[in-house]
Image 1 (cartoon, rainbow, N blue to C red):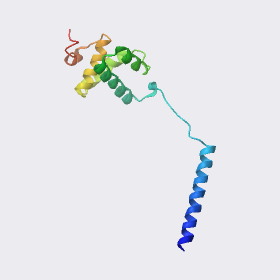
Image 2 (tube, rainbow, N blue to C red; image 1 turned 30 degrees about the vertical axis):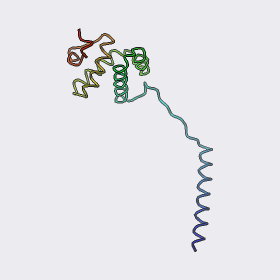
Image 3 (cartoon, rainbow, N blue to C red; image 1 turned 90 degrees about the vertical axis):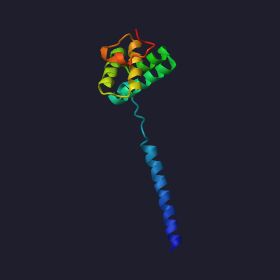
Image 4 (cartoon, one colour; image 1 turned 180 degrees about the horizontal axis):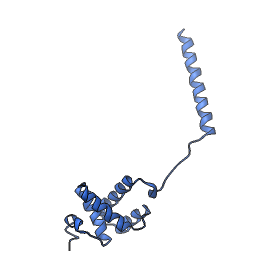
Length: 124
């Protein structure tokens, strides 16, 4: 009785593996990729905050601009200003706000809500 179950199990596994190979061969998985411009607004904001953190750490403006360029925003500076003000209004993480304000200031924009978050090295 035990031998019959074992043989049935092996045959079932073999048929399942063969069926999986045939289906995988006839209908392979397709890669569906999207660019940064296809990100949801939440992930786009997270990415921008990460670019700001990287810029705050390494000061590499060219790298920050290249990374922001991947977002395909027509006006990255305006996007960062709006995002920074949104984060301020929502009382988000102060470090994230400071990083966004640093990016906005590097683009040459500071607004009254941003004044409290301007790093001392950038203050007028």
